[in-house]
Length: 325
Image (cartoon, rainbow, N blue to C red):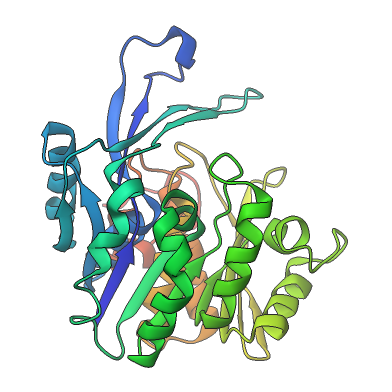
């Protein structure tokens, strides 16, 4: 069984010490991207993974290639094409000051040619494999977006499990562009990750008074999706709590307090945790508890992807400042 992730790999430039972008002269560079982030975590948990993407054959593209290799993620479906790698610049939040992200990913090699990386996939992917992608990928690559129903239909006919995170980003595509595409995708999805606002503000199938449980059940009923999961952050209480809905079985996990060193990749770590539990056929409560711990742990790293063992997650300290001796 192999987990394939199709998406763009980005370089993240971040000023040190919470500096604002307007004052920055130095940047740290990290490699990430939603699908890659999830695969990095799953690879650390022992799964066979393959990233499906396009990178340019120059020094910046090589930074991403090295990250893939170092993380034990498969690179069989990484295509090399001339062009540029997508980047973004992140101003970290501090106190009451909100963070800020500036994307510079237009006309990247993936945006222009990413769908070409899928050409060899159908002859290699097998029944029981997983295909992971997000709304971000749909937003960035228009060609893939236009072929998405055909691609997913073919994969499902081959017995592949389709995993989709709505992950709507208004600065990448408009609501009017996104809704019809996402609506066409949802009936083909086996495992869906979503946020409450996806139901209330994007798809508009729930009112703002509906809680996450009602939203999950509404989406499941309307699109007949077998498994739906979500990670919910309570800013005031500083807690993370996961939910999962499988058929009529709804589980609300334990709420965990968290401390923020880094917000990037927390949802991707949650996704990886859910998939890990489902693949190993853990109970839903055990699965959602593990996934929430993954998200909590990712908040404590400086990388875009959680790179720890399953045992590290299971031994997450129950109180702040725990020390393993």
